[in-house]
Image (cartoon, rainbow, N blue to C red; front, side, top):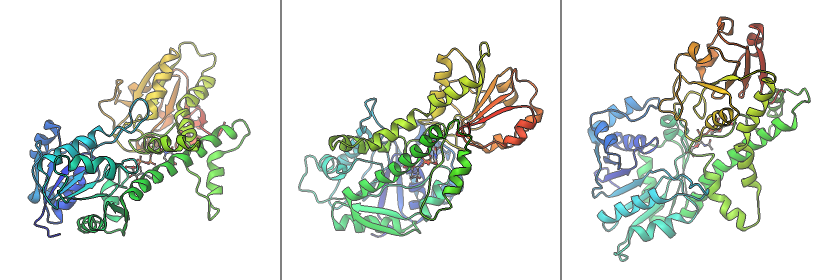
Length: 417
Ligand code: SAJ
């Protein structure tokens, strides 16, 4: 495929926008399409809709070949990079992917290539997307493949280039054409397969993580009260050449790992297996376990006041999608506790965030560290003088326990009690 071909990237989010930039930088004429008009007009004025290390610089370097539009336009290649969340009933929500396919259908021409980056259940390319694309013109020959993204927020740009990629087309030609496009910026190996297998690979990668985190979270309860240092135990167990236990924590957040396993659960249910679902449940129950632990710490305290430190779903990101912090806050409120929230990065959260740390902990009886932002490593506990009772519950084994104890804090660490 020559670089004079026009590529349209649909959905300019955490993956779509950097993908559009990389392809433009590689020399393709790229049009970024998003239904959000505010986002499009911002991008046209060179304003980025979110932060990601290195994106500003990449954006500048790609600008020459990059245009934005809130209307679908004809192109030779379409990359679908829209969200695939789950419904309230935990079913894959494919309406955004379907809408993207409907939009492409309006401008589709012979031999166009459509690449789906969004996470989708196995069989979606062939059984759902292809019929929508070719609706009313079934005779049209088009190419279609799945190229699931694998980059981790916070390191998206680096990982998009260096990670190996999986590409699976509905036929060989689709697979090979897609490989050509991604070879323009991917330095990792590109592995080729069929569409359904590629769809499955993405899901089992994230489900692997979820199940393994669930195992670590299960261990929290298994070792409770036995005087075991779980974090130390995991570190030691991982010295075994074939063991890789994940880290326990307050629960699993983010737009992928807490969602993707549900794409497999329906099929697993049909076959009578419960393993994946059980792991989801274990991880989803962690916020209430955290509250149980904090309740014990606050026994006898009248009208407890707590401060949640870090509401992002993980360290050093401003993303709070599916964050366990939200459940922790809601459970604490439902117990009648007064809750203050601090996060140095997150904005537009459903509850008020106090950005001033001193104010956030003022009069508090217990701090609950949920997101292990670097910011909290820099907090000097000796200087904390304005709490009512000096207690901290660390869900990440992140703070320096001895330092906080020296400052007269009652320190409890998830997994070590
Ligand atoms: N977490 C733990 N214990 C661990 C690891 C993570 O409790 O040992 C928690 C985190 O705190 C967070 C959640 O799990 O709440 C997920 O965090 P993460 O850093 O593991 O993953 P994401 O969601 O930020 O990014 C993932 C990545 N997938 C894998 O590592 C398999 C990324 O490569 C994917 O591209 C991305 O999801 C995606 O789009 O699917």
